[in-house]
Length: 286
Image (cartoon, rainbow, N blue to C red; front, side):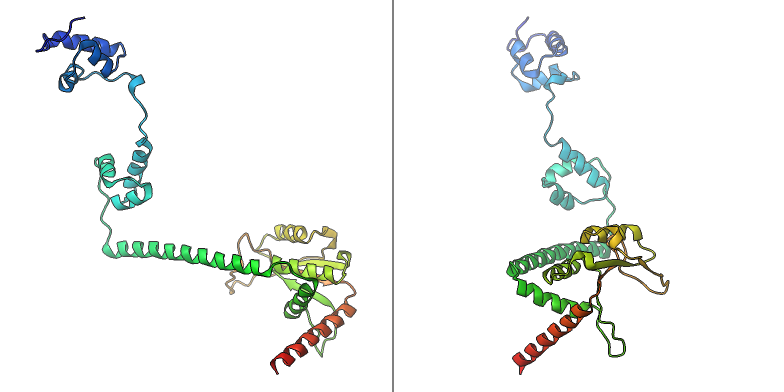
């Protein structure tokens, strides 16, 4: 094969050789070494219009970023937003999207609102992180509860949330109603501590008619670990169209009623325990 002279000889003949080698699948470097053409400008002219063989085309690590940048630009994003989102330089972004139409300029007031909303979302995220840290630290402060601590907690919990006798309506029954599963768990643990057998408990669900009644019944049955035979008939609350309820959605499961059978004696003890707590509190503040 002819070598290039100082003037590279007959250019057309040299180009024909270069094109032939290119179509045989040789790379630029291989053609350069084969023809002894070390001037890149001359080599470019020799190979002009001839595509590189597939095996020389290596995937570009930035191809994915380029595609994402173009997608975001078409959605109206600015260079600044794309840079923050993808972590690449503005010069690269400009090169990748320069053929795309420029996004319409937003009204300054709209831009200010968007920036304000972004700042507020960031602030809310920081507050939520701080809130979670505080809750986690507080939960760790509780540690392991003693029986007496659980006993006192249960008495106060029942007197705050449980059913109580009235002078005009003496029932002396132990009935507890709540919608918080955590509260129900604490209350049942307290009854276990008092020696109340689970077989002496009866349950019932109270829920609005617009909710998933069957799902709520299954949820509470699973929570307390009781067979459905331990549940009395569900109380359905009629929906008042004039009332705007906030307790809606998939997380709404109504309230659970927990009743202790033949609980008159237990109720009298609860009332006495609470009276003792009140007396002790008064003594401490006297």
